[in-house]
Image (cartoon, rainbow, N blue to C red):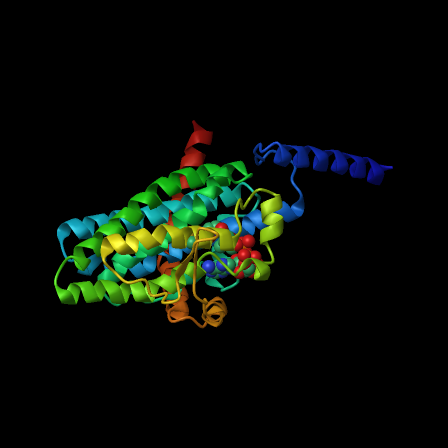
Amino acid sequence: MTTSVTAVETTEEQAHFDALIEADLRIEPRDWMPEAYRKTLIRQISQHAHSEIIGMQPEANWITRAPSLKRKAILMAKVQDEAGHGLYLYSAAQTLGITREEMNMQLIEGRARYSSIFNYHTPTWADMGAIGWLVDGAAICNQVPLCRASYGPYGRAMVRICKEESFHQRQGFEILLELAQGTPEQKQMAQEAVDRWYWPALMMFGPSDDASPNSARSMAWKIKRFSNDELRQRFVGMCVPQFEALGLECPDKDLRFDEETGQWIMGEIDWSEFEAVLDGRGPANTERLKRRREAHDSGAWVREAATAYARKQAEARLAA
Ligand code: 3HC
């Protein structure tokens, strides 16, 4: 008897969930949701949060070497923004029933993914420009549709994140523009940085649609609104006029405009490189995780102090 009541309830709850998705309304933490939807969201949101946190490393690397006080202040603000994005996203994931500590352990024990893009090195100042322009540009392309994700806390977090990413993208473009209009050596440095980051930025959108196991279901649930290939295509189209404005060459020598479809057709992406990075064999995978573990260990006293302070405050409130 109990089983059948539960079954009826679940069917009704499922129907209510389906109706909310169909009507383009939001699912909130208080709402019933299928377990697979919850798990998918935890996976995507926590991976996204980890990407923001690991993503601080390649840029923080340049804070002490930024070429002027103004550039240093801007870079520090940007790196702080990324920390903030990580925090909004961890908070959004927590509403799904996973703890921050659990997510953090998944990251530092190498059980969780973070974006492939942050496993590349940043050997010159121009890499700060290329990251801002291409990486944050790709992030905006991928993330603006996520502002309409069906899960309320995720969509709302993305609105603020996208506003800040938009500033990040412009600052990157401006760094490259200044270099591209500088001495021949500076222009070459800008070109080399763009050559380094262009293809990895295209890989950020994930595997092609026919190799993406999660896309179809995530799109049916309206978590993702566009496929990986659709967003990658949109990004390439955005980059073309910006390459021209910068006076830099697109590293894709096979890129061509197809009059019939009105789209840019890109050259072949080296998916073996993407797979290697996902498998932990990218240029900087090992050092990124090592650094994160060290930061976790050296921050233990801060967590302990904050916990002790919170306990004291709670005791004082009870005693009052
Ligand atoms: N890096 C690492 N892993 C990736 C990846 C990438 N660029 N692209 C795909 N993958 C992984 C997926 O996580 C999935 O692995 P899993 O099943 O073990 O979790 C597998 O490859 C197959 O990919 P799918 O296309 O099936 O996976 P999704 O449907 O989840 O799509 C995604 C992948 C497009 C990255 C999607 O998860 C997404 O849109 N995530 C939110 C955005 C995000 O996380 N961006 C990361 C960059 S953040 C950033 O750039 C910060 C900014 O400050 C610059």
